[in-house]
Length: 327
Image (tube, rainbow, N blue to C red; front, side, top):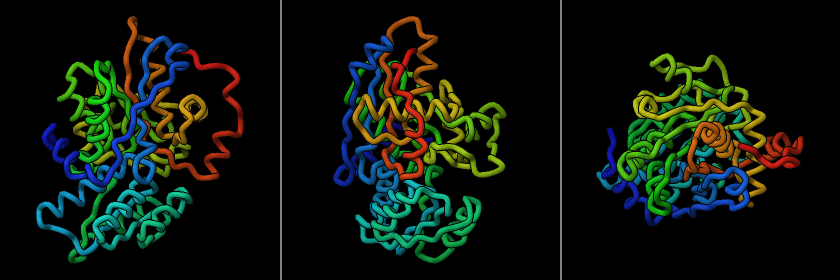
């Protein structure tokens, strides 16, 4: 399995390409809840999401090992698609991305803007099948969205940075789609701050990771999940990421209303563009803090900030800012 040296090497590889994002907090929120909550603002990362780290590290690692591919391919419904397209552009490598037709329109447009050739597919299953077929072509290299050691190592640099920016953190929280970010967060946290808990959050409507943990085997969702957290719509975690997820301290399953609720509140309090997948994690924090008897210092990875018009309308269809959050 990966260790902290893998995270450090990834940090060195991508240093000149990605942003060292800030850690923010809201004094108002902290006063209300009686704890200290810090936000690693990966919504301010290149392409607007942490995914830039993993994609950039995977390609840099290939080049470092004299294995620069003739073409890069990937399958994704959103931020990973943009990340691979952007990273490939940095190294002048042609790229093809297989995306489901129901992917966020703004993420499709952004992926195209980075020079990627996009092939829209009926659903995740079709895009997964096509990328596997394409990976058999000579000179092509497939960068999966999460189930890849160098992708995981790259994602882990986000929490590596965060724990060097703010000390004495009691718990690290991150959203779970395929588990790449949480896996990297676990590796970094266990080394830098062994007593710090690592906790995940995923939509109740897309709870394949929680189901897998309960069953102690990877469970695949029967159909495309109906969730506003489009960054966590993975049908199943990977065999690599699952081994890390089994070492988590907890996994919370979040209802859709709470995802929307915290998207509104964090947007308001932090003055940032916050994806529902990112904001979802705040509800996990709220639930965890209810059972804590002493004041805690918590770090949340705000994974991204790319939201299309359709989801914006869903988020702001009702106002949840009349009553302040209570924990």
